[in-house]
Every structure is written in C-alpha cells, then in structure tokens.
Image 1 (tube, helix red, strand yellow):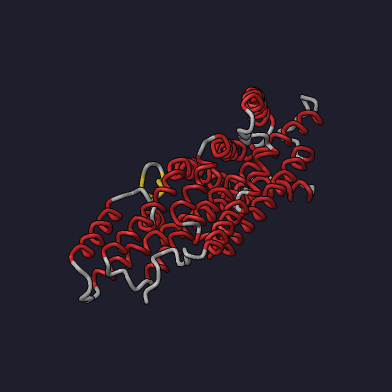
Image 2: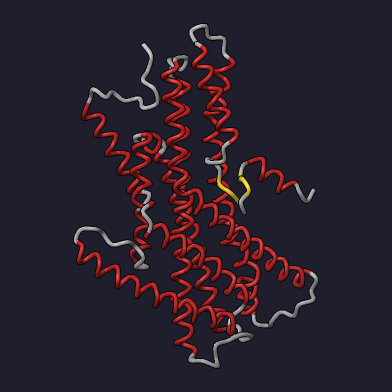
Length: 382
C-alpha cells in the first residue's frame, strides 16, 4: 500500500483535515504577530474592509499621515546631515529602505494573498512540520536586531550629549535630540520588522520545499506519471508563492548590499587611523568608549547581522528548492521497470525547466543570486 503524494493526511477524515488547516493558519498568523504589532505602532497597516465609509475615511487620514511622515523624515535627514556623524546618516538611509519595504508589505495585496496562496499550494504542511525551526528563526532575528537597535539609540543619545564635534547646540538641544531619537526609533523598528519579514517568509517557503521533497522521497508511487505530475505541479505552485515577494525582496537585498558595503568601508576608514595611532583620541574614557561605539561598532553590528541573516535565509531557500530537482534526476537514473516513457518525459521536462528558469531565485542587481554566484563573489579577490 503506497502513501498519498505530498499531503500525507486522510481526506476521508474531515476533522483531521480541519485540524491541519487550523494548525497551518495558526503558524502563519504567529509569524506575523510581531510584524503586525510594529506596523500598527507605526500606523502603516492597511485598514480593514469592514465598512466602506470607515475604510474610505481611514484611507484619507492615512494618506495625510504618510505626507506628514515624509516631511518629518526630510527634516530629520537635514538635521542629521548638518549636525551628526556620517554613520548616523548612513544608518538612517539604510533603515529608510526597511520602512519602505514595510509600508509596501502592509499596503499591498501581497500581505493578504501570501498566506492564502501558500495554503492553496501545499495546505501549509511544511509550515506545521517545521514550525519550531520557523519560530526559532523569527525569534532570533527579532531579538538580535531589537537589542542592536536599542544599543544604537543609546549610542546616538549619549554621543549627541557628550561628543561635541557635531553637536546640536546651535538649535534647541532637547527638542532637536528628542525629535531625532523619535524618527530614528521609527526607522530602527522598521529595520527589525523588515528583516524579520524577509527571513520568516523565506523560512516558510523553504519549509514547504523541504516537506515537499521529503514526501516525494517517501512516496512509493513516483514511478507513475500522474504522481510525478502532481509533485511537479506542487513544486511549481510553491515557486509561484515565492514569486509574489521575489522582486521586492530582490530590490531590498540589492540596496542593502550597497549600504552594507559603505558601512564596512566606513568601519575600515575609522579603524586604520586608530591602529596606526594617527588619530587623536579624547582623554575622557566615556568619550573614548562612545567614539569607538559610534565609529567602529555601529557600522559593523546591524549591517553585518542583517547581511548574515539575509544570505543565510537565501542559502536555505536555494538548498530547499534544489532538493526536488536532485530527486527527479535520481528517479530518472533508477532502473525501475514500472516507469513508462511519459514519466521520464515529465521528469526531464520539469528538470530542464527548473535549470533554465530563474523564478525560484532572488536577484542581486539583476543577477541571479544562488550558491554559485556567492562563491564567485567571495573568491573574486583571490
């Protein structure tokens, strides 16, 4: 007796199917709790469609809010560029990308369509089976970036008070500092939410790919043409779910790659004079500590953490999506007398399609981002 393909549940048992659906829905909802909370605090979440009049009024209020928010961001940008260190301005611009991604996620239809398409494609089995791994990724990303963001705000406040090279004394110090702290806090919380959004969504898709491949391996009916078509169709549906976030995530990753490179350049530029003793440090230990934190730690911590988390998620996605291709090739190489020509044709056609298609890859500056590309980039200096 062979197992059912992919979704290993008894469809005759209505209660079991409903339980699986509720479990998957609960997992998807749980991955969106912190992101939705930050979005509500920032007032960027799209209003519900319960009543047309209320919805229309809230839309107008939110548009006015976005205009005011844009004006405040411009004022903060001017203040930072005139009265603060370049590292604060650089982090400000980098976090602004995260705010834009978060606004897109909340205002676009992808926010509502993503979980629906995922459940339609796979019934959310992968999310249920690997919910601990998804939860661990979410908690680690959220906690790490939240701690680093609070550290960043602390360094910003203390350096604005104790470091006098680019102070706010020409303005009202308390008012200007409070305003900048509020704006920077908004942007840093956007960084926390946007990076968590990126890693958790890729983790959800990777989990579905892995579960799909696991079921394909354990299924004894894969030699049948209809079963092979079924698995190929499910795999293409998962890729279609990924395609809904592929382009925005690719743009977000490409822009951050540029800013992270500038951050690292800023770090080296500040580190070399200190190592060569060509830079005069202040006598006050507090100022020395703040100077090191501002010029060395801030350019390194958040960009490096975001870069590692992002590329680790991309790598897991690539490994998960390629598993099915390898299993199809293994199936083609087996000497199974029960396999017919149509099954071979299905496997070969879909394998060729996956190798020639870039729909399951993120892009970095328009280039396909996969393991081979990352290896060439890392080995290029050698």
